[in-house]
Length: 257
Image (cartoon, rainbow, N blue to C red; front, side):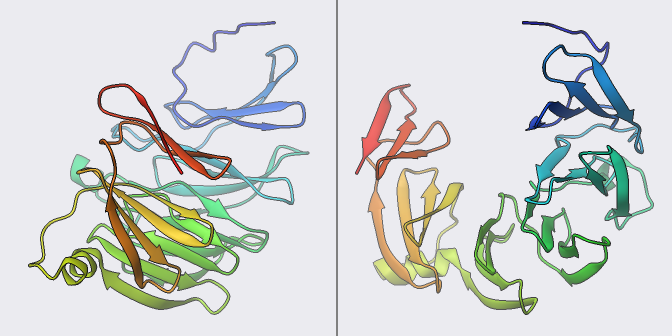
């Protein structure tokens, strides 16, 4: 239908809202593009980060048609998608030192109508969607996108803890070491675990390990079972008709009931 060259690489996920495509460039400029013809509707410049790292600018849309944009400088923006104007913004980068070891790293934004949850390289934040104030700050970080279920958010921290937050009361419900859970299950010594993916399926937490094992936990953090998959996972698992599908390390499709 159309193709446009905006003369700069894009560095974000894409979002579509009504007639708009939203994306961010590597310079942290936010683009609103007409999805029918590719014309630029508006460009919103934000803080450019001199140094580049593996963090990819992240976009999320809530049920109230507000866009949340987390850029590589560590700033979170709330933007009204109808007017394309900024509601508020807040910076979550705790360091004023711009050397490469202090670059902002973050995870994908998750949100409901009232709260935004962001895990940076140092802390996890619960933020009010209306005014951008920080409701709670926790001194743990996650390498994987958190999972929200009703008023609860589940994390796997950088220290391989399975952790649950009650975002209604803004408090940690439980925190368990995954390697201890596995060691107790098999009655062996604790070993380092290499995690691949984690998902919430049928009210249970599924954690996929790189050595092709699958840990299934109840939402209260108690272990249900650990089983070995037929082959290693080489893609993000998807769910279709109560089956788990993934591509293995031999590039074959695996289907699990």
